[in-house]
Image (cartoon, rainbow, N blue to C red; front, side, top):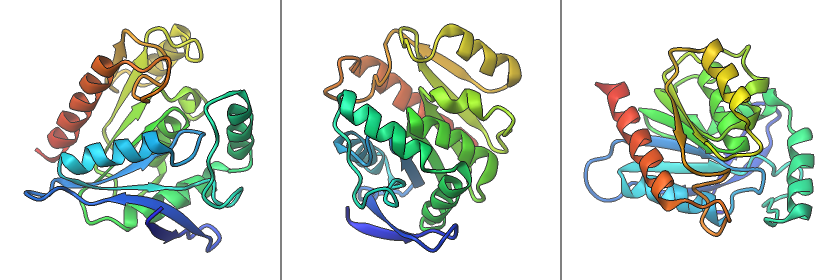
Length: 220
């Protein structure tokens, strides 16, 4: 971690990973929302990717109330630990933490996130102020948030072979929000996470390119 934020929800200070936009024309800021495993090497790598593309990136450690510097391994025990942290983190609290991250960046500000962070990205598009556009990657819990209508443009990415997000779940989102772009990839869950058995570099690269183009189009 290399920074701090203070949440308006309860005044808690939470850690962040920050990456400054590469030298050249700054395109904006982006909040990168973690998976249930914390601000992991994967999340930091995603921040660095957006920084290289011209965005000041920040990833808030939104489970810091559960455990300072929260990290969970990529195994069954880590899944259990991460899911317990999700249960301990009400949506109102999470939205306030993301708002603090948005407020820490100079506009325009975008939001993206992965797995649990994909659902939080949807939440931010619906509840947070100062968001220009958003891009959610394989957010299984989006289906629990469909009553929260996005107020800004958002794009969604799913793996066609993701057992945790069946086609019926994707169809439910599409039917409820037919104007939201949804892209499917020949991959499983976590296809952007290096080291994962589902890591698919081609799908991740394409989804990232689509995300950057979507962010740019929101400013046109």
